[in-house]
Length: 212
Image (cartoon, rainbow, N blue to C red; front, side, top):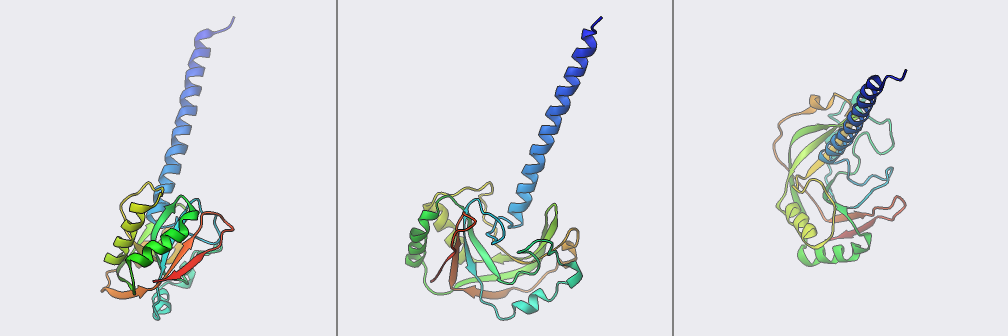
């Protein structure tokens, strides 16, 4: 004789289990995206396909090698291309541009609204943790960067889950759990740049560079 009560119980348990697993997966993905965004991992990387366009300021600082030398070689995360020590210091103006076709308008708007060096001050070294590695970075203060970010967000379509702009500069990617080792208070260091780079959303898209 078929036991309907047993069948119903098993059915309820099964549906509850599947729903719970689905929820955990969604939460996990959401958490991962949040960590990636906070860590600046959504910045354009040549080895990864970018979902959106990104605009970055290239920093010209002669003492950069001295800064990255604080990272112990055995701590470096370089399991994938594009990680390890940051060789090209930069600060992201905005990640999330929806239309790569806007590049010329972006370029012209910045040239019309800003001339000369874009100045920043880097200070404390902090870190972010991701599921696979930690990101060691400088915190950045810059009125110029804040103005450029606002200029972009006010005039172009973009996508982001985190509207507050907190610029930073990646120093290195290190193995999981080692980022906190490098947390330290630092005196402000003046840096600047005049070259901006637009990285398109497509993997094979050509980067555009221009100077202000």
